[in-house]
Figure 1 (cartoon, one colour):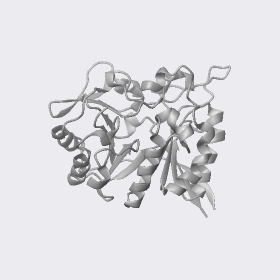
Figure 2: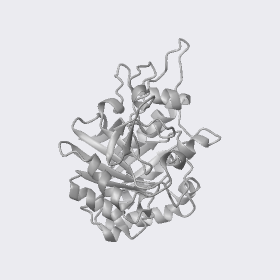
Figure 3: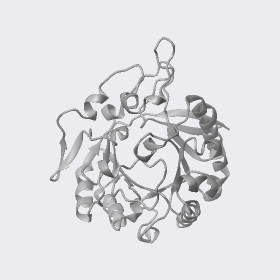
Length: 334
C-alpha cells in the first residue's frame, strides 16, 4: 500500500456553520484563538440556538454544523442543540471538544446524533498538559475511550506547533490504541492567545514539509484517515478564497458572523444577526479584502500573519499561502 495526497476542494452546494455556543472554557490552552473581547462572553440561549440553527439552514444545500466554544460541552443545552440540528435537517453534526464532556453529554445523545472531535496536543501528558492544562491528557483520552466504547465516531485534532512538533509521530500508536478513525493535523494560527506568545509558535515551511507531511502519510498507511491544511500552494496552482467560493459561516455569541477565521481578532466581520435576520455590514469588512489579488496568495495571511511568508531576493514570495480552509486528505491505495 502507498499513501496518496489529494486536495479537498471547496464543495459547491454545501454549507458549513461553525457555531460557537459560548466562549467560556475550563482550560487555558496556549494557542486558543477565542477572544472574548471580540466574540462575546455569554452563552447563546436555548431560544437563540433554535432560531439561529433555522436561520442558517438551507434546504437546497447539504448543510453541516460544527458546535464549538470555548468548550461546547460546558453549555447546558448542547444536547438540545445537537438534536435540534438533526430535526431541522442538518446533514452532519460535529462537536469539537477538549474532552472533558461536561453535562454527561455521552448519556444524553446517541452515536447517530453527532460525530465527536477531541483536541489533544501530545502523545503523553508530559507533552500535552503544558500546552492544554494539567490533567487534560488523562481526562481527554479517558473520555475518548468511553465515546468509542459507546459507538461514537471519534476524530482527533492535533494543533501542531513548535511546542509539540517533535512528538507528532508518536501520536500514531496512540491513535490506533484509542480507536480514532480520523486524524486532523491543524496548523497553529497567530490569533487570540497564540498571538501574544513571546516566542513564535508557527512552523517554518521546511518543518511543515519535512516533519508533518511524512507523518500524515504514515498514519494513512496505518488505516487512519488524515486531513491537514493545504498551507502552501504548489507551483502554478491557483489561489481560491473560501470567503468568495465557499459557503462557510463562523457564528459567535455576540451575533458576529465571519466568513474567514483569520479575521476573528478584529471587528471586520462581514455579517451580523440583527433581530432574527442575517444582515451585511457596511464599511470596510473582510468581504472587501477577499477580492484582493496578491502574489502571496491569501491576503488575510499577508495582513495579519506576515511572518509566515519568506521572500526571494527579487521580492517574490518563496511560497504562496493557500486559503486556511483548503484541506489536504491522505488516502491509502493498493
